[in-house]
Amino acid sequence: YEIIEGTYKEDIIPVEEPFRFFEACSPRKVGDTYYLIYSWGTPNQLVYATSKSPTGPFEYQGVIVDSGADYPAGNNHGSICKIGEQWYIFYHRMTNGTIMSRRGCVEKIEILPDGSIPQVETTSLGFEESLNPYEIISADIACVLKGGCMVTEKNLFDRVITNITDGCAMGYKYFDFGKDYSSKTMELALNINGFGCRGTIHVRLDAEDGEEIGRIEFGMNDGVVTGRVKCVTGRHALYFIAEAAFGGPFIDMFNGRQLLEIKEFVFCK
Image (cartoon, rainbow, N blue to C red; front, top):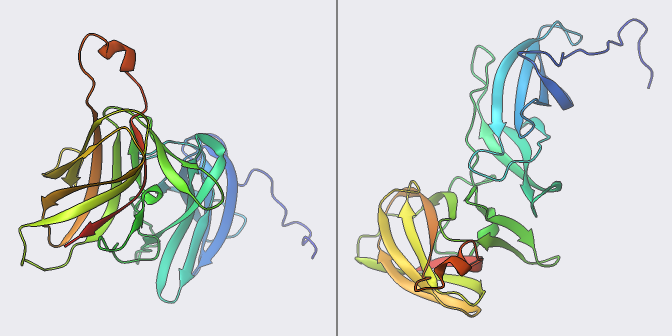
């Protein structure tokens, strides 16, 4: 290829407000509008600017996705793409507690008639409409990780949520529990790695402080722990909140101690 004389332009997106360009500029053309998707001064966010010319001037528009919303924040790179009749934003989340470990993600987006792209939330869905709670779910697809917990790789095949301490929150969006009203309760099974601690996983719907539908007690060892939870119907976000069972005169010695790792889980009726 060759660069057409007179078309090369430096600093097409400035570093000053409101653009705050950082890196990873990706151009797209939609209709008669040129889009530049890039990582800006808050590097876990992908934002965009638009112009009627590929060389600008560009006008800053806003954030498309924030991979650090309720999740360990790192950097972010990606762009938009149309597959069939649906537009998507491709981006990544941070794993292993370092910006050099990245997990590819995708969310549906909408380009409105005026050309704007409303910001979308980060979910666990990928290309799916909903997650099936009655199939085994890998815990590492969580889209909410708060309190210091994070995704890590045990090996090429196993990823877990690790560093789960007292008060950590793990969230998944969204599950479709269906319309079956035939039972008042169902079983939830968690496959865990134990760390010599006992505690409780509080199971909540739609928010960290949402309706608690049950509790799962866990012990000190590796294995599968189970418990009965309220039968749920419809589409919901799901949250696990970890609580330690420390007590007695030595409680201060256990503050901040890792309680467990979660590998996978499934609901059973």
